[in-house]
Structure formats: structure tokens, C-alpha cells
Image (cartoon, rainbow over all chains, first blue to last red; front, side):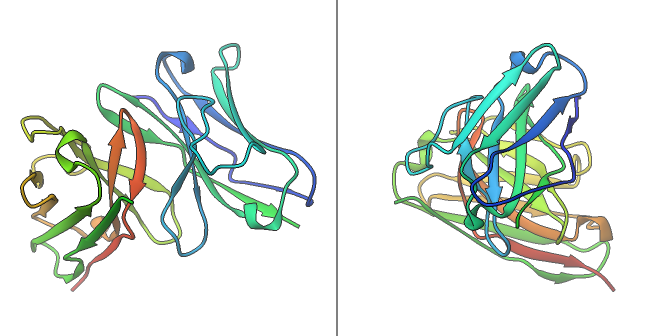
Length: 110
Length: 117
């Protein structure tokens, strides 16, 4: 099976834009949808992006997702950062009903 | 509103067994695949197992294959994870998740399993 690699941590100031990457180790990033989950401390994960670039209802449009076949990676971009965006973010994809999660990225908004 | 509530976690000795349950409320349970995902405190999410909507098909991560069994009771709106031959490395918070396609659309609050002597 493949792996998804994320940066361990990123930080940015309120109001700025941050992008978190998720690189697939083997197979095409475009072959299976990528999801992004937000997990605040002490809470369960919630979906912020599904099927590469779709936002569930209730997720602000400051959150966007994309994939880049040239780098075989997916990205989560959060614009207009707020302190409430500080959390861990996980990418997830799948192959033959097996889910694969990235290692997670800790976003600090300082 | 969909709610998932896990139960059954606790302290168990290495080699022991534990059965986790996840009770669902809200819209039709029997239409959805269900998954278990675990998380060592302070670490990342790891997929464990999934079961299809009618319970006829299951898949497991290699790390738990042959030791864990996922099942469901659609009449009672529950999904279970029977965990046998538990190891220290199985210590984690276990979440159940209701999937829409391959998206974990709803998550429970998690139940902590600690394997220690």
C-alpha cells in the first residue's frame, strides 16, 4: 500500500494564508479522492474537505483543497487564518476499501 | 443529526480481549459502511477496519488481521469491534466513523483502550 506524507508542523499569523501538503508515495494522487480532517485538541476529527476539493456544509470557504499530479500531492489551503483554525490536520485517501491517513500536520496560528 | 457513541474501552492485560461497540442514532444506519480508526494519544490517525452496509464484507489493517473482528447489527444500529490477543501497541483511542463513499463523514467521541499489565 501507499503512504501519505505531511509536514509535521506549520505556523502562520492570523489573517494570512497557509498551505499544507500531502504527498502520495506510490500510485497517482489523482486515482483516489483525498479528504482532509481537522482535529482540535481533545476533540474528534471533522471533515473540512472531501473528494479533493469539496467542502461540507458549514465549513467556511476559507478552506480549499486541490491536487497536483506533477508533484503527486494534495494540498489544503486555509486563507484568512483565525486562531480557531489552530488544530491538527490529516489527509486521507484509500485503495481497495483500505483507508490511508497522513501522519498529520500541527497548524499553529500565532 | 447523526450521533455515534462508542463504549467498551478500558484497561486489559496483554493477551486479553475487549469488545467495543458503537451505537448510532439519526438517519438510516443500514445504508452506510462503518469504519474503526484508532489514535495513540498524541499521535496520528490509523485506520483499523471497515464493514459494508449489510455486514457481508469486511476488511482489516494488516496490524490487526486475525485478531480483530468487525460486525454490525443493523436492527440495533450498532457496529462492534471484537479485539482478541491484545498487545501493548493496540493501546489507543478507538473511533467509529460512518462513511459516505470513502469519506469519514461522522465520527464518534472515541473510547480509550489501554493494554497493560
